[in-house]
Image 1: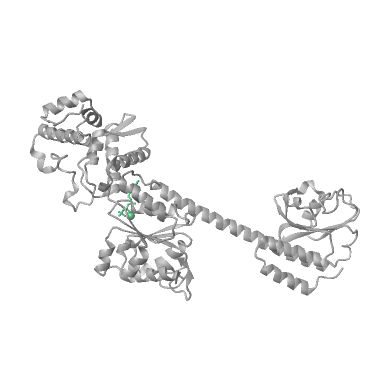
Image 2: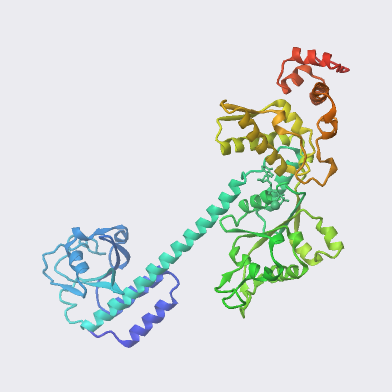
Length: 527
Ligand SMILES: Nc1ncnc2c1ncn2[C@@H]1O[C@H](COP(=O)(O)OP(=O)(O)OP(=O)(O)O)[C@@H](O)[C@H]1O
Ligand SMILES: [Mg+2]
């Protein structure tokens, strides 16, 4: 048997370097072993907690790949695992052979044969074994020790590389799963569902179904608090990128001098304070979605930088010489009228066109007929959980009151109103298991964005609530309020007294009595 030639080593090194997959690497390794050592079977096994797992083999039946050998049950393996050097078993060794009956083209027990094993160590760590068998006894006797040491070293390095790649791949896979899980969790925290059955909401949902799986950049626009962020998260969750990250950037909060570093990253030492390399938002969103919230607030200088990145799909971290390729889908949101901003020169027309390949308008709550009740139910259930109360309900009259308001702060305002009211109701009804939100708990509806004079609830319903009326008697104010509420209920129920009574959580006789006392005359009584 010859000493392994330098040519064979170089050839193997090149082969291994060119191999793309682990399987490929293992097979090339076994090919080389067979070129250097004449044998009938060669097996590469990895070792983990007392078990040997065949990773690649030649000359044995394929089912061997599925076998797991417990070291302590296989004396030959036990000897090999304890050794730090190649071991040649005597041809007549009485130790049972784990490959008995597994050799290709040979049924039954193995006869007297040549058998050896090379323990594989890398960095003093035991990784596994390479076993070599031949049906010709004594055939391994004259192989130079140096050849075996070299083969062991090459096999150990190959195995180590494969195990490292496997570990890295599983780490990468794990990180990707974590990102997908966190993105999904953020979406679910927001509710994860666009509540609403109104015509405009159904239209919106249909649009989202159509554009989500596309890779279009989308501009989401609409008033404050309508749910633009929730729409963006829904788009990501329903896109082909949903297992990738969704990275959030609040453009309004980007300091102008840090825009570039925030978006594109920087290298260590690029500027004072840059004490380590940092990936920018574009790179973090690679393979996923970049959500540019409040895009209308972005200064013009930053707009051109973003435009360049979107056009070229490349970014250049601050202080780095070369560019990096990035694959991101952009979703942008604004409550400004961007077209108008473009006309006034505050927003770049070219960026506007790039972003709004498919613009989506999220309607105001006022436009979503019938949705206030559904959304109230959704927020009541959410608040119930947050407050840890057993049951939380709302009076029909209170719902009616909410339905008559114009909601300038949209869904967010409704969410806050419900949370506040629930807290008040809970404080009032400390001992009850069922907490009921009453109209009083809602208070006077005045939007948090108090700049709009129309923010208070419509005067037909709540004439007596504003402070100007405080000097009238409580009795008069209550009467006026009840009167308006009853009229509103009758209007909504098309003068159906029984339905109006149900809405107000009272019975029909009582409603009739009150109406009489309050001098309410309704033209037509249906029932
Ligand atoms: N259709 C909906 N169903 C359930 N929850 C909603 C819906 N729309 C909005 N919300 C909730 O209302 C709140 C406000 O929504 P969001 O933050 O998405 O609004 P926005 O349009 O981004 O507001 P802003 O303009 O102030 O940034 C969030 O808590 C969101 O989960
Ligand atoms: Mg928002």
